[in-house]
Length: 67
Image 1 (cartoon, rainbow, N blue to C red):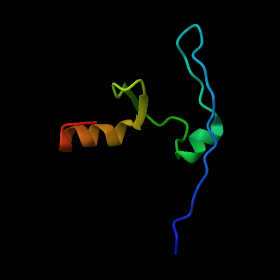
Image 2 (cartoon, helix red, strand yellow):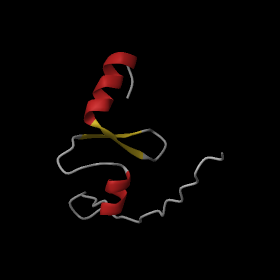
Image 3 (cartoon, rainbow, N blue to C red):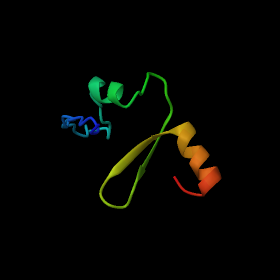
Image 4 (tube, rainbow, N blue to C red):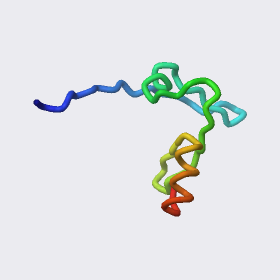
């Protein structure tokens, strides 16, 4: 059986004057991010910002030495 193709609609966001970005609720739901979850944000050095659950990022850092 072929894999299910999920088409994700991109969401355009912007950085406000205070450096804040609001992410659309649909995007958060799709990523299973509930209110209050801790995140780690970092640049991957390729003009991208990565958001990871803090718990998973710390575990990978301890176990693998990398985020």
